[in-house]
Length: 485
Image (cartoon, rainbow, N blue to C red; front, top):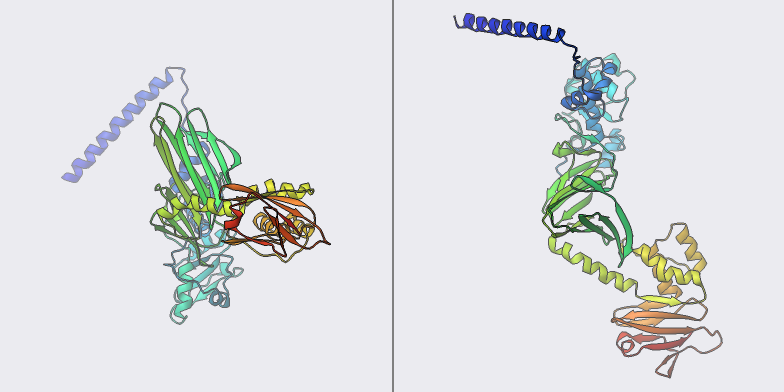
């Protein structure tokens, strides 16, 4: 009885809808208005509903059905992301190579499949390469495998270590990734009230500074390198109206496999094969988007860092972002700028005056401005004796700006320092003057080249023969000294 009533009610609704549609059609026919069906522009809505990444719904004709398209797109997405869950296992690359695995390609392990899914794999491998591994217990041979390279793993008899390594690198995931393609590569995008602000760059006080400026806000980004990259942000609302600022930073990852792990004050990204870690540390709770988040806006195959700020009138906010191989605390971040300034002051502490204007320009201006773009801890020693040889290595990019500057300072100009003393032993065979900065004062040091004369130092009109060392304590008491070299 209940079933009959339900059916009768359904039929009644159907009849009423038909009458309404008939009346609407009659009304449409009586006027001159034209009606058209709404079509999704470039099948955008359909692609989003299917959660397509690599393909678009218009590719459906290539694969004969939407189901096939979705399955193949998922396989390709898994391969492109390369984000397996390893639980911090250190990968044995030799073991995998001996099994025949190509470490330049990801591992796609298949346990259960049918002929239809096998066709999806064959089609997918035309677009992206991967190591295809089947489980021997469930392996079925089909003709379609004839021209395909694949591996068969016996999970019952294979070594536990090999099995663990393969499973750790397996990128075959059940969950569907949802992405947007990458356009803004490894760059900042800063918006004020949804309008993009473009930067102007300058070198100032040993920092590379990017200024994002408009009538409402000023965002200053100071950059330097010291055992990792530091980005110091200062965001200022210049107006008496509340402003919204959005920061987006797309960071390019260069390796093959990555594992992402949330940590205190940031994110740890582990490159699995080399077991290298990159730490992203901040003191303002930035948002980190990566494949495992299943976030709508993750840009394949990059890590995205994002933050939105609301600034009241004339408000200022500051924060620091560190990218490097050390897990720093908040205190380390706050101390980092002063430590960097101190190190730069120790390295760049002189200017020279000489006949060689190229040398003068390199030491006084060019190299100090290039050093700030390099890691101030990467100091190497070079066994060279002439300016021409050093300059050639530098031009060939076999010597960094930091190392060329230190060679010129320590060996060519002969300013050899430690905590308490300075030794003078220049290779430069001409007269020149060094203006040495110490204890917030500038000391003038004159070098007179004389191949025939005995070597001596003159301090307060007193000659010290065969003497080329002075304590920093004594140097602090005088303004000028001279050496015959």
